[in-house]
Length: 276
Image: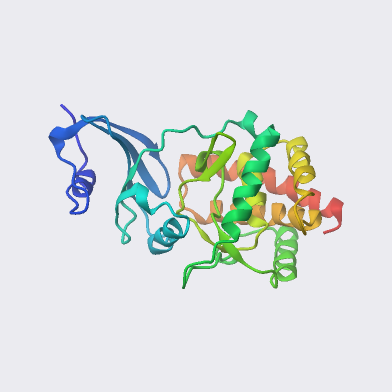
């Protein structure tokens, strides 16, 4: 007998797109993260859906849905609760890329093209800006890291901020027919145009040769500045470290902290070497 959590029952009983228990063919949990729990749902008519339970209050669901509409993905969402982030979305049956895909020139071009396209979208009114300092007084960041972090933020504070996915990773995009489509917009914000690509590189945890590969590819982008790119690689590592240490400890968070420690040390050595 299929056991359905009470929160899912509440979602299935929504007025916009109700789901009847007898119509369910498959229901499998596919993700249990810090900000949501997700399920794969298949009905007896073989239609497939992604069902999400929002499970914390640090993400802004109004902001998230505003990005969904600006990105022209609203038609995929059968139900979206802007109070808690619960939703039912049509299942996107295309693959997310592998780490090997990150080295493919067609992927790099498709990714950078899509980032550039999103950055040109006019942001919704009252769209939230990324707050680089939200954790700075909640964690004990080493002075040598903090000094460079604050200086670089001030240096690029006058840059034009753009609509950003803000949490790009190989798990948050689809690569299909040489095109990239973004998914999962919980952390969408206004941000510096260099953040999305720099944070994607950080999230992918790639080796230096891949960083160099992306640096070389992006030199062809109009007005692309290599030093600014490396500055935001450091900024993204430093912000990720702060986020990790501001979160409540759990086995996943503790493991992530260890990775952040290692990566931030490397990023620091890099900016010092480059004289940033």
